[in-house]
Image 1 (cartoon, rainbow, N blue to C red):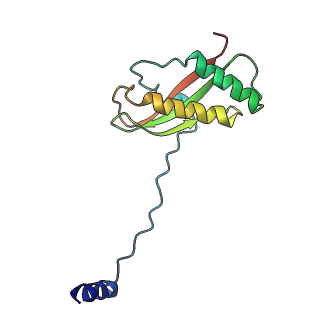
Image 2 (tube, rainbow, N blue to C red; image 1 turned 120 degrees about the vertical axis):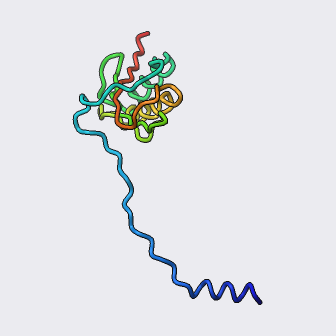
Length: 131
C-alpha cells in the first residue's frame, strides 16, 4: 500500500526539463601544418603484414592509389591524460584505408604518447609493401 502511494506520488511530481545541449564536435583546424607533431614515446612502424593488408584493401576497393606505398596523414585530439579523444584521417580517396589508418593510430597512441597538453596533434602513418 505504501509502495503504491509512493509510485503514484512520484508520478504526480513534474520532472524538470532536460536542457537541449548539443554534443561537442571535435573538428581539427583546416590547416594541419600548424598542428604540433604527435608526441610519440616510440614512433610506430607498421609491420609488413599491415602493409600487405593495406595493399590488398587498395586492390579490392579499387582505390586510385598507384605505387607500392601510401602515407595517411592523421589529426589526433589528445586528452590531457594522453588518450586519443578524436582521430581524423586526411582523405586519400580510399575510405577503407583512411579509416584503417585512423583506427591504427588510435590504438597505437594508447600508452605510447608523452603526456601532452590536451589538443590537436598530427602524425603520418606510412604503409610500404615493397619491404
